[in-house]
Image 1 (cartoon, helix red, strand yellow):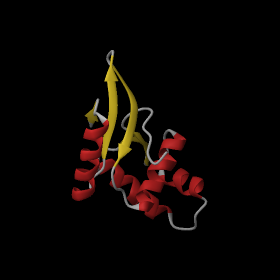
Image 2 (cartoon, one colour):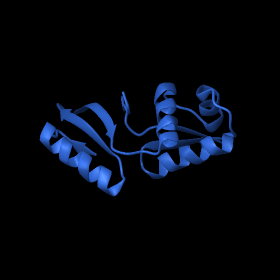
Image 3 (tube, helix red, strand yellow):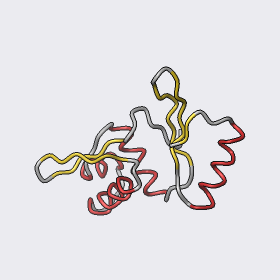
Image 4 (tube, helix red, strand yellow):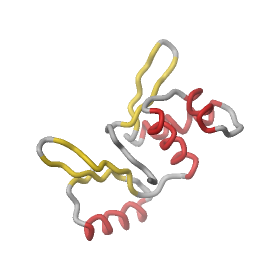
Length: 113
């Protein structure tokens, strides 16, 4: 996470993120509060779509993401994308019985808006 970047520094961070193919979170921080949290940089289109669906839902499991997507495909593919996002540190995981639910690591996170 990078905070309180100037526009020039954001542009530089974007170039680095693109070069190393790793997204980063940009935010403003003041008065002990984060705001304007935004994921910047490259993501595989299917992984990006998964992240957007989880952000929209607030919290979701693979079944929910699959239903929200209105796309044909197996739930396993959505689960794999959720795990990818969790391993990147962008989603947190919560277990409820045998099910795993995912939510953004930071409230108010935006991507591709």
